[in-house]
Image 1 (cartoon, rainbow, N blue to C red):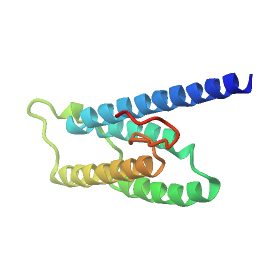
Image 2: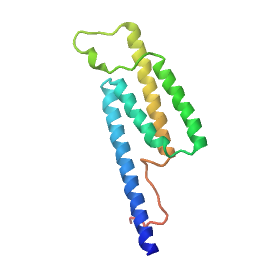
Image 3: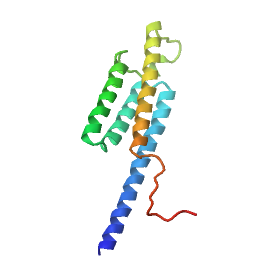
Length: 139
């Protein structure tokens, strides 16, 4: 009976890991599409959902220090104004010089935030190859 429960728990662990990886993958795909099209607000919302997914696995001490870094990035991001999606920039509409400067800074900070989260994802072992010494080799 214990062997059956152990197998069930292991299967559940693998299924959960697969679902987490699928959610992370989908979020990164959405982020890429949004940032490439200038939808900064939507990009930030996606990064926030990635933060929720990743930060939930941090221990309290690590969470607090990591959250401090995340908050610092967010404060800098919004110091240049509200994030806007580029939808209102079609046709002959153009941005003021200061708006262009602010959006450029926001873009760079969004990329920094994405890299911060990607590194956190790697540190937590999510979305990367996982090696289990207990498993048989694929050879």
